[in-house]
Length: 280
Ligand code: NDP
Image (cartoon, rainbow, N blue to C red; front, side, top):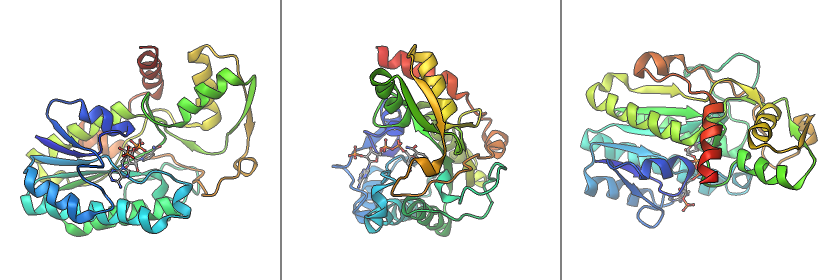
């Protein structure tokens, strides 16, 4: 059995539907109580652990950094320790927001981090704690997650595309939109690989192909959904938010393919699957 933290989130929902998984929702394990997370691992005695739960409210985190740091930093630290005590792998999902977004080159897993906001700092704290524990682990950074479940950019565009004839969308933030079920599948593949070969422990990147601006992603969403909403390209400065976002979120995923045979899936196929899923 593989123990998963999170049951209701975009990635967690897919994991929870897998027959090998036991998924823990907030009631079963609240990440604001790291000891409870460690206790849940000790009593479940799983073969591997995947953490798909997180404080993900990027803007709200600016005002709640303490809570975000407990959930995204202290809880994964406790999970990693409990996993190491059992001698089982810990797969922890992280984010492009640990980088400062400078330049245009894809970020490599070992590049210097430098989060520009509270959410990124809290996720970086989790990464550093998991590495410091030193057990068998994978930190899997992803970006721009979308699925038919929960709140995300793609679903917001589908809603606004029905209501409006045109919309301004940022075109100077570049990244790889990533379909949540693809992340779930990658986590399971990595967990199985680490069970067999703990030497593959490390930090990895996994995002949808190819890298695009939010404006390009929005235009394709409208096209695929048959919505006649025009995308007007705007700059980040024209769309102020409480938290700053990295401009360059390109992630180099080549070491993930080399270590685990997982290639970048196209986000277009994920988008089509999402639309099919939502049409029922
Ligand atoms: P969601 O925002 O869809 O879901 C978050 C999940 O975490 C929910 O199941 C939520 O439960 C749970 N959760 C939040 N706080 C707690 C808590 N205190 N105790 C227990 N559970 C809690 O997340 P995603 O699926 O989008 O994200 C998965 C991973 O990917 C996360 O690590 C995230 O940081 C990372 N990521 C996400 C990106 C994105 O665009 N969304 C981009 C890059 C990385 P509840 O329903 O009860 O609130």
